[in-house]
Image 1 (tube, helix red, strand yellow):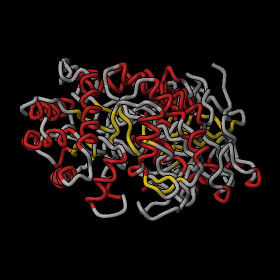
Image 2 (cartoon, one colour):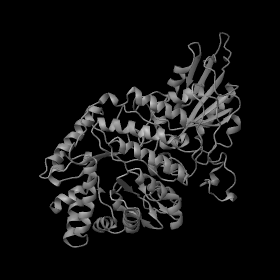
Image 3 (cartoon, one colour):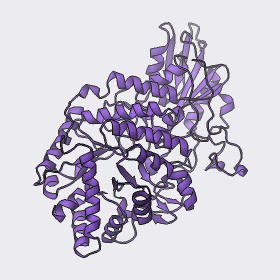
Image 4 (cartoon, one colour):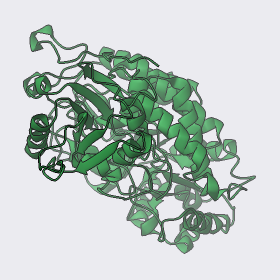
Length: 569
């Protein structure tokens, strides 16, 4: 291989920034769709046509080396409208069922496979220690053993279905200190993990050991730092620890423009990252500058030919292992798999098992023949909100951004035909009266509240209270109903200690994805409550960060790690 061909293999470009013709010209080894990186129209057929065009361009190079097309399918093929959107990992952590996670990974891989995608930038195996982090919901929980078990299960399911898995973000991204730097401009995301090596190895390394044992062949480096040193520039972490001590002979891919955060100019960024052990660089936009810079670094002796050969060997090894040289594209075009009935049924089951019942004053499960049920809150009838970030767009969105069943739809589906379900997002039910104008008595009110969609550092928060307008809405419901059930749709625990005494039942639904009917199933007793908290639930903002290893002086949490009431099956 020529130097140009080798450096091309080390280059990954975002699909909106490169044409198929330039894939051929520059021997590019990988193309990706970031959050929101979908074709138009956003259909399975268009996805496959897009991937095929890039793959044919790669095969048109003299050596015909196939490329890897990657996506962040972190809870289903979530950039594709109509795909099955599974609960985010925080919900799967509450379910704590490795077999379920493996099955979800296989289903996700099947939907990727149908559209030609071969590489999933998942799972997140961060052991999150501060729930103010905007990526909390991408992780399974705060406990190392749980994260290790579920992360390994996801890798097994993904790799077993022929899709390349990528545990991320190596290493310590869940341990960053609040407000520890200004590198990323966030409060926690991409910041500095100020922990000793013993803690790094005891808390944050085991999930990677488990993922590698499960067959992971690519690992994504973390934006974050460890005691002031950016991981993307750490030879100790990427080469000595990951590749040397752990024996990893797959390849390391950088995160989105992450090498640009290394100290120094762009030339030194490239040299430092490659010499540290990054094998493929996600340079989403200006790939020509990256290729030219790395070429110059080799010619000037700042990056050795041996380092280049090592990186390319790792990339090609994985491509051979994935069978890309024999079959660069999946043979089947089974578009019916995407969002199909079997996958949606699996997602609904996952929702049922993920719910955590935190309070129940003899209210749940509700009777399906209750007479009148009042449902309030914008999140009750909003598929975008219940799916959260990383859904169609990077930051997610509100409304019918994809196909699915809202929580309200699910309630109307499961109740008896004679049961009247009334909905008002603001909790104003003045119109629900009898012939004399008196308020009709409701068997129960269901208020669905929580967080607006967000992703990564844009979801970092100083405080975790409910919004004032949602607290006001719940107060109106309290006045209207003798029994008030509150469902929180959120990417992390929220501070609700003051409000809790006014509620008769409380359910943490996390971010259930496209199948909101699973929430209704459990509220009305078609399935039992079995989920347990995978994160400590704080009693106040002043306690944050709080987790199971926190100093007792911080006080008792509202609900401890592992808490969850159950109902009869």
